[in-house]
Length: 361
Image 1 (cartoon, helix red, strand yellow):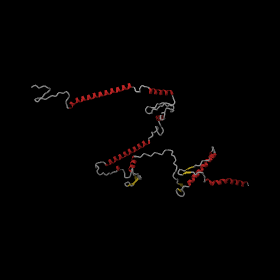
Image 2 (cartoon, helix red, strand yellow):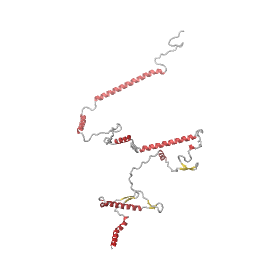
Image 3 (spheres, one colour):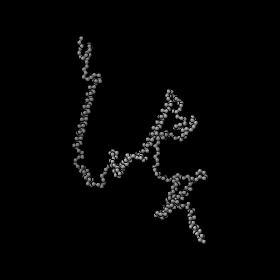
Image 4 (spheres, one colour):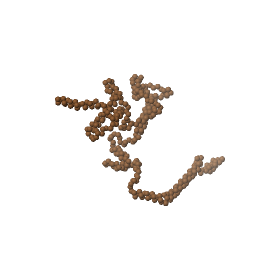
C-alpha cells in the first residue's frame, strides 16, 4: 500500500511537467518580434516583467534566462521556416539560405579609403579600355611546353637572347640589332620603374595627409627620440605645455621662437577696477583735449626732410647725367681712330714733312 501511494505521488508530481513539455516550442507574446534573419537578429518590443527583475538574485537570473530562451526559440522557429537543402548529398547537413540583412550594423572602424588610380587606370578610363582576364600560361610552340606569358622564361623567348634577328626594312644594315634590342629593354625597364616609383609617391602623399607620429611603429627608440616625442606632446596642448606636469629629472626648456605661435592675452572680465577706470579716464581725456592728436611740428619737419632728400637726389641725378654726356663727347673722336687734342698735319704736294721740319739738302 505504501509503495502504491509513493507511485501515485510520483505520477502526480510528474504530470504538470508532462503537460508543460509540449508548450516549450510555442511561445506567446503580446507584441510580435521584429526579425532580421540576415543578421540573426530578433528585437523584442515587449516590456520585461518588472516584478521578476527587481533586486539581484536567483529570481532575476531565472527571469532573464526565461526571456532569452523564449526569444531564441522564436528566432529558431523563423530559421526553420526558411527554404533549406542538403549540402553534399542526402547524408549531408541541412543548410538554409539567409535573406539579405535589413538592419545596417555599425562598424568598429571606418571603411577603408579607395586606392588612388594609377596613370594607366586613368588613361584606360579616359579611352574606354576594359581589362580582359587572360591566363598566365600559354603554349610555346618552339619549346613544346606551357610557359609564362610574361617575365623570365616566357613563351617565345626573349628577342634580345635570340641567335638570329631580322634586319627591319629601311634600317642601317651595319647597325647591331642585338645591342639595339638590349638598349630598348633597358629603357623599358627604367621607364616602368620610374612610373612605379611615381605611383608610390602619389599614393604616399595621399595617405599621409595627417602628419605621422614622431616615434616608429616598433620599439627600440633611442633616448633622443623619446625626448623629442615628449616635447612634441607637451607643446601640443592649448597652453603650449605651460601647465603640463613634468617628469622627474626633466629639464625645463623654453619653446623656440618662431615655431610656436604667440598666445594672445586678454584682460580679465573681473579684475582690477582701478586700472580699468584709469584707462577709461585717459581715453576720455584724449578725446576732450583741444590739442590735436597730430604733432604739427613733427609732421612739418618730416615733410621738409623728405623734400630736401628729393631735391638732393634730383641734383645728383642731373650731375650724373652731365658727367655721362661729357664722357660721350670725349669718346666720339676716339671712335674714328684719332685721339682728342691731336693736331692735324697737312701733307704738301711737293715733298714729305717729318716732325714739321724740312730735311737739309
